[in-house]
Amino acid sequence: MLSFAIRRLLQFIPTILGITLIMFLLLNLIPGNAALSSAGKLELGADVIEKLKADLQLDKPAYVRYFNYVGRLAQGDMGQSYLRRYDVADVVFDRLGATLKLAFSAIGIAIVLGVPLGFIAALKQGTWPDTLSTVVAVVSVSIPQFWLGILLMYVFSYMMHLLPTSGYGDGASANLVMPAMTLGLGYTALLARITRAAVVEVLSADYIRTARAKGLSEFRISYRHVFRNAFVLILTTAGLLFGSLIGQTVVVERVFSWPGIGSLLVESIFQRDIPVAQGCLLVIVIVFLIVNLLVDILYSVINSQIDFK
Amino acid sequence: MTMNRVFHQKNLFFGGLIIALVILIAAFAPLIAPFDPVNDADLMNAELPPSASHLFGTDSSGRDVFSRVLYGARVSLSVGLITQIANTIIGVSLGLVAGYFGRFWDELIMGTTNIMLSIPVIVFALAIMSALGPGLFNIYLALGLTNWSYTCRLTRAQVLSVKKSDYVNAAVVLGYSKTSIIFGQIMPNVLGPVLVIATLGCAEAILMEAALSFLGLGAQPPMPSWGGMLSSARDLFFTAPWLAIFPGLAIFVTVLGLNLFGDGLRDILDPRSVLKNT
Image (tube, rainbow over all chains, first blue to last red):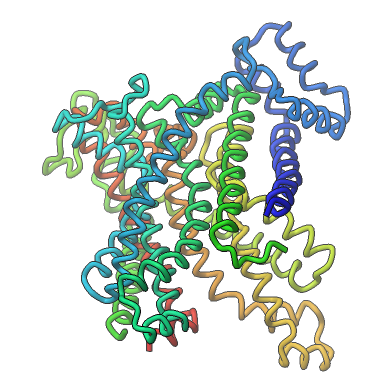
């Protein structure tokens, strides 16, 4: 068990290296060097440009710069903002809390609503709850999330005056409701479909037939056998969905002026503040990888039949 | 079960109908649109609600929203089409190489694919946008170069399962060249599933473009794109809701059509689901 966790943790390293390499290539090998051309557009002073050149170590070959970059990252140094006098790491981690709060609330909504829905659809195949969940699923993956957010805002804030339109509101839960719903609803439908498929598959397994033959009650079968087995698949999928969900926070944060990493990322892209943008992107990816790691470990704890080798 | 099958064929039919309609609108936008989407600005008639002369109302510059929505189909469809052609070519080629040649190529390509899969597509696209800056052309690049991992994996898996089959062995024995085996014997097995991925990917790309344009990173004003229109509608939404409702509906209907079509196509092409449904 522990060795599985450690091995899984070690697999982390090449992935992170690959990602930093891709980020580095994007930043450094693009024609005209993005950083300096952005400095030109912003009409920065000569001293700042000199500092940029020194920071980027343009006189050294690319691989040396890459290893320096990774070395600094390993020490938690993400560089400095081009535009303001702050360390990227400080400001990015400052914003991380708000993004995590939003993302976990959204995946929470998706699990709490989606899993029971999928369960019902699977147990009552071909009836109206099943058809309804199919339709809702197709509709909700086709709705642009930010549009849904704007519509919710119109109904609940402008027409009904129930919820604040946007902002963090010092962490008030009223401010969290709409962003989390906007982000979570699409994933609710996806999770419901996946749950349905998982449960349908488990229901057709031999051990369910055996359980029925043993005369176990339907409730006991659903609970002990079906749910426990389907849960492993649902959990894994929820972990994967979390990746696309954490990417979507960027858009939802923009709709609701939520002060997370996503808002910071978009601002820094506009201002061509590349170290900040790069820091945001890296942290988003790392959060995604950590969540998947935790899901993998949890998965192995729940399903003790998994062979750790 | 039969109901299910009928339902899926309905998917294909209605999805296809919606796609055909959007393609026609994009192609004939200049003939259908009552106004010019960019030049017919009229500040005296700004933010008018929907009426007989302006079906979807007017925007903050007094331009006809209906005409802009019609022209917006061009941007969305071009994004869907261009990015999926690029993704498919990259994914299929790399998948064929990894599957057919194996060893070093397989390790290299699948390693890269796994890293790509560990980065959410929108984050990857934002990374490219942050390096290249905003603009429609950069969106083509950001979405066309990043979303090929599934196609690549699927192609590779398909190649591996076909490679050992009797008819490929027969082709080898008969002295067919590698190219003709790859394109003549293996490719046809890959095309169906790849088409499904491309159709669903097209829907995803259109949503993604809308989101990036909403963030202000896509097609720049005054070019009429649905996401861009929503972006400029954000602050006016409470006073002029039609500015956000119609472009959003346009995105929704188009993406719905593609998703329905893709789902229907998958059910027809996937032999397992056909067996299951008959």
